[in-house]
Length: 489
Image 1 (cartoon, one colour):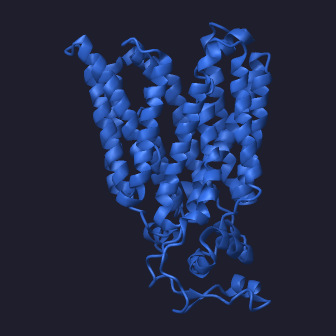
Image 2 (spheres, rainbow, N blue to C red):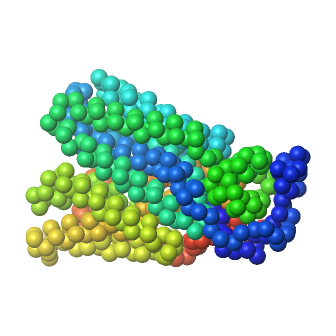
Image 3 (cartoon, rainbow, N blue to C red):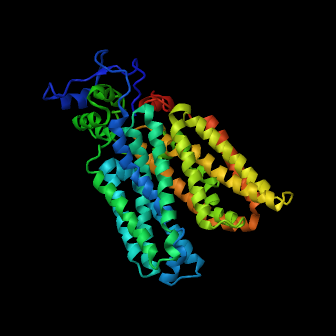
């Protein structure tokens, strides 16, 4: 959140609140005046903010867990609840969660701005606890679908809040690394769900245990947020200056509070309390950054990542590898790529990782298309398919997976940040839903070669789009990024 390397643009002084009883009013009305004394130029210790970030990533763990929790148990669920063989019902058990996520994402911006980041985390955990409990106790398909829908609402609220919170409480020099924690936590959640589902065919009713387990991290998130720091950005926008200062002391240490507060003073206070209208996001002065964010999420989904996940079991089965091992292999490559991204995010930067990731994904989907051609031998097709799939997942995790969720809160001005994220995440869920709905039908109608060629085209379009529209945000304060993308008149 704060770039401490640049002193010239960050030399400000405020009336000390502990020395002047009326300082709160003065701060709210007059802000900060330039001065060149007493400001540190070193980076704040990362140890202050890391516990708060780690708690926030529990949301990402739950996101990954609930995406994968019905993967292995779906057959057992259908048998126990009496809809075995009904592919439509089985599809609804999976996709109802996505529908709930879309609804949750629509309202996430207003929840975050209205209640604050910490309470938004708690509100996202509540439907996940109730929904998972309903699914675990369900005796009918309707009960299962209602539980999955409630879980989806929590999933729709949680990820945007996590991206906002991590961006706003992180020092600039480790913001990329912290942002990668979100992707890593999602991978861990997905792998946990897949591994936990392995005994489902051997133990009667084990699928209910899988749902009960998810209530533990949800409850932990709700309780831990009682002691986590609130976003200083949100408090400052609410006019709660003294509270923002106190939270900054927890996040960066006392010696860095003044410089952090001087960065917050650069927020646009003229219209900070005005309601953000949808028209501003869709065709007003903020259209450009919202367009960039929505397009990034759209291209992320159109790259074929979810289709790759859906098709992975089939490809591995063709070489005689059980679906359990196939899912674990995909999870390992996803996690490995996320760890590499964490190391490189604040070294190479967001834009380079995005470009390299989408380009690598384009090469991998082209390999998949070649594998589906008739000119390749059966053995060669198997190796190309499996190798291309694993490399695709790895390169996705290097940039296209973690970067959009980190980059968008960075490029959105503070006034519209929460609601703009809600709009972009809604685009993400809509395209995600249709890719999942239409993939198998398109695979049947078009064939794998043409379908993977389409994914290659979308990945190359993403490379061009990122090259032309995305700016590098590595090491920059949120205020510097805002000025670069939205110059003040």
